[in-house]
Image 1 (tube, one colour):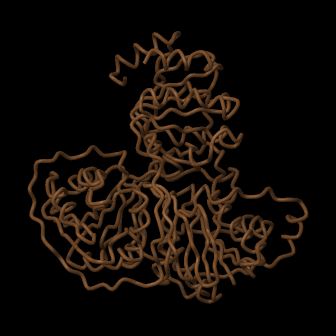
Image 2 (cartoon, chains in turn orange, blue):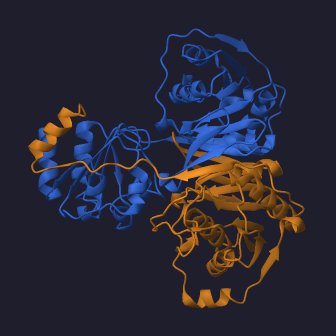
Length: 248
Length: 311
């Protein structure tokens, strides 16, 4: 069984992001980047399924500029067998990304698309669902457990009401939530081995994909700042402060 | 003029309260506001929705396939409804809304606005990116606007309306290939972390999972949900579904207690929208005090039990 894992290069989750003074966006130059944490979880899940013998080939895909190659090398170090880099320097919104992923999914004859439930930069939480829609395939989003059984997958999903389990026929799209697994630490030999694996570069034109209508960004602004509050010295003062605010 | 369709969420014959907040967002857009109830028998949910302010009419779509809110099943029905001249399709920013909305947007060939937190016009909205560390103002292109509404950003509309309820049938067939198996409801002994009005979170300073009991005791005393910092989760004190922060849950309670939490960016990103933040920490220099509304420097092992006793 061939699976596709879509991974995105994002500003590292430990970076305190800066907004450009002219409001044109978030500073990304010279800032540490890494693989989107939810995509790492998706990648880890694919590798575990391969280690269990349920998956035969893992293809990592990223969309974006030249530096996306670093993210693909990380995916290859995790255990992807090969990688596809959809090269595009400009902004790629979810519907356009979904079109490209759908085209690759079809071309490769993959059985599962794994990806993170959302990227921690744009927080859109759309690409997996949109790809499933374009392919007319079942989707199981926010997965916290995945069990493959031949032509079906049982997926437990983290939803507001608790844990929901769905059974989906393959092929299908699965998006990973935080609890699905804990990604492994990459070892040096795996990182070295990853350097020898193949990354195929393609363009939207190669895939026959056109950019979708997109949202136009008017401006990027900082959130309202929280003003520093008061310091209290004792528990009694804390209790009075809470009572004064009507909170207890 | 806008014609808005809101997809109501419901479970066990009860309307999800999120609808009244989506209605508040819809009223800011302005125009006619219809609410769609997709269920097997949506009569009681539709009747409840019809009482909410701002609703023009409620569409009750009864369909045997709608026993569970499965995205693959709901999306084609919503796409069909969208064809009745709607300019906006709005979903609550719940896990169900987030599951279904992009499927509808993709089928309609339009981009989606996720987590609308402010409405500037019928086509211009604010939405958070980088876990709320930046706010994007976006303009939707021509065509239907598909959006999810961030519930923490809007105040519920009042009841007292009596809008008409219309039974509507749709012809969209349910795609095969997805089956509901089971649902395991979240433990009901404590309020759900994501929607709780009060949350008490503990950090690495707790030192062990046994010591976390003082956090639970305080939480139970004030009827709060319980969360934790990533450091506490990584140290194995609590399971990771309790993690509050950028890669965990992003919450907006009325009252938030950060206990023994230093205030890493990761964590702060998850609590930015809390109405009141109370921080208790031994280290007066801890960054959590920069964002706390009320701070108390002290040893949590003496402060927290004392606080619990006095509340």
